[in-house]
Each structure stands twice: as structure tokens, then as C-alpha cells.
Length: 474
Image (cartoon, rainbow, N blue to C red; front, side):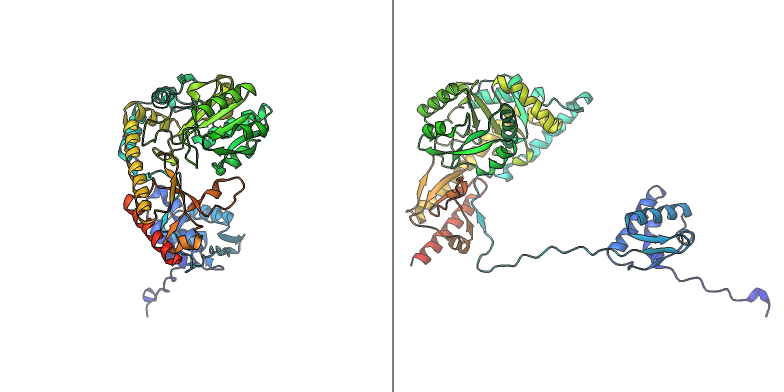
């Protein structure tokens, strides 16, 4: 048989690496190395290339994939450095053994306590009312109008256009007294309280008086700022003056327009007494106006700050009107604290996002924010009315307290309501005791938030609660 007819040896079987990497190797040259690396990492992680698998030499793999040997050598070196491969000079390259990821423990279902169907969580706005289209338009307009220089690190006090718009809005709607130069834009009320706490602690203060019951979630903010929160009781007219004087604090944080969570309004006499106290002790009142725009039976009570801007630091945000996720708020401090607070803001985060500030400024100037407030006020009032109406119909023995305002009310039951009963009814209720410093249980009084729930949802949930209540009572 002539030698030219000799049968050639069969080609080598394609290696696993060749099969797995072939689709990535056929991609555009510019991103080929990145695609090959991603494909090989994925194959090692999910076990398609088992630990201990020997990979082809860089020369053989480059030939099979029709890429440069340098690219394969660089790929092997990178994945060896990352721990996906192991190699020894002159001995070859293998797939490394990776630690399998630990699976998170699965929660055990408890048939006796099903997940709540309706959560009457207080303080949560109707996030479905967020004006996505209008906000997107405001963002586009802001990006189109902002000069390049405005995208540098911002003024830590806030964009001048936004401070001017806020000063106009708050003066018109809440009766505050402030010029744009006196406004600090911050990341919500939480940051405003933190900045104030840091400045006051640096000035030698060690305690801060807080309402009890009140928003206990802010206690860690005060402590992190270097202050010890001292709970002061609230009565039907507001913060109790005798207890405040006995606290030894020179700063008090309060919610005078609609006390959280009891729903009382600080009376004119109590407001005047609080201002007298602040003058007498060279102190400060911090006004958290968290939902002052939402009063349903009359015009909202104006701000405490408007009576004495030199004694009151006023703060608020868009958390109840737009969305807490925007992290947009404001702080209006007395002039004597302004420079220190601006510096505290600067070292904290170098200022808020310029584009979000510009979008909000345009949103305010266009009148869209006023329309948003009217929309929220109408929805929240309807939901409050629905909650009170169905409670009066199916649970007439429940007593409602708190003014017609805000996003929540207090419901007092004639006897304790155990959590097991709420779970059976498919609802979740927050006891008033959750908002006290002592955490003492108050299973008869509950803080019911309604703003985030639809009227039909509210009615169904209360009816289920009433049916469960009756069945247990029988």
C-alpha cells in the first residue's frame, strides 16, 4: 500500500473546557477575554467543571478556540489568582476545589401564626401615589438645565434653587420664618436629628428630652450622636412641662402639630410655656413636623418655629407626601447653630445628590408638589373615614382618639386583644406600648396606620377582626 494512503490518527476528543468556552470564544474580539473568563468562572462555580479537572495547556486551548496563546495564558493567570484554578510550573492547570455556598436556613412555617394579610403599620405613606411620570419629567428637565459645573461636589447646605423653593413653600404652608440662606437640605428627618445631636454634644450637652410615647426608633440616632434620650410624658395638651424641667435637658424634640403617636395637638398655652422654658434655660426646641400638611377637619396648626425662630429648629421631609426612599428633607435651625450644622453636614456626606435636589426644586416651582399634597390629603382622609366608619359599624365598643389628621389614629378596645387573635384574623396591629420608652404592654390601645391601605382592604380587614373577636368572646 502506498505511504500516501496511510490513515491519519483521529483528532483528539474535544476537552470539557473547549466545549464550554467555544460560544464565548466566538464573540466580538474586543470583549472576548472578558467573556471567556466569565464562562470559565461560571462553569467552575456550578460544577460543570469538577474540582480536579485538568485543563488543556494554554497552547492547545488557544489552538482549539482559535485565539491567541497570550489571551489564554492571561486568562489562566487571572483565574488562578482569583482561586478558581490551581497550577504548578511545568505540571499543568487544574480546576480548584471551591467551598460550596451555604444555603440560608428556610423559615419554618407556623400554621398557628400565619403571615399578616393586612398590616396597619403607622407612618407609612401611600407609595402607589408617587407621581412617577411627573417626577421623571422633573428629573429630565433638571439634567437638561443643570450646567456642567453644577455636577461638581455640591454645596453641603443644599442647592440654592431648592433652598429658595423650600423657604417659599414652608413659609406659605406651615408659617415658618426663614430665608433661603437659613435652610439646610438633608437626607430626611433622621439626618437632621443626627446633625443636631452632634453639634449639641460638641457644645457640651449630654441629654435630650423626647416625647413618651413617641418615635422610639430615633433613640439610637441620639445615642450615636453622643446624647442620652430622656423620655418625658405627654398629656392632653402636649409635652408635660414639670417633667421636662425635671429632666435636666436643655433640648427637647417634639411633634407639636400632631403628636406621634397619641394624636394630640400642643395647646397654645403649652406652646407658650415651652418657649418660655427654652428662653429660661438657654435651650432649644426641635420641631419634627412629620405630617403637618395633613389636617382633615380644619386648616393645619402653624409651626412652632414661626413664633420663635431663635428658639426652634424646624425639620421635615417628603417621606409622607412623596416617598421615604427619596431621602429628601430639610432643617431650619436658629442662626446661631447654622455654621456648625452646615459643617457637620459637609463632613457627614458632602451634601445631597445635585440631580435629585434640582428635580425637587423644579417640582416645587411647577406647583406639582402642591397638587401632590392635595391628592394625598384627599386619599388619607377617605381612608381614615373608612376605618372609623367600619369600626363604628362592627366594633362600636372601640374608642377612637386623636385629631382628624395625619396617617394614623389610636383605637382603644374594651379588653385586651392578644396577638393570636390578630393572627387568626389576618391583621397586624401595633400596641401603643411599642412606642413608649418602657415598652410596657398596652394590649387594649393600638396605633392604626391607614394611609398605605386601600379603603376596601381596610373594611375587609376590620370585618375579619370583628368576626374573630366575636367568635372568641362567644
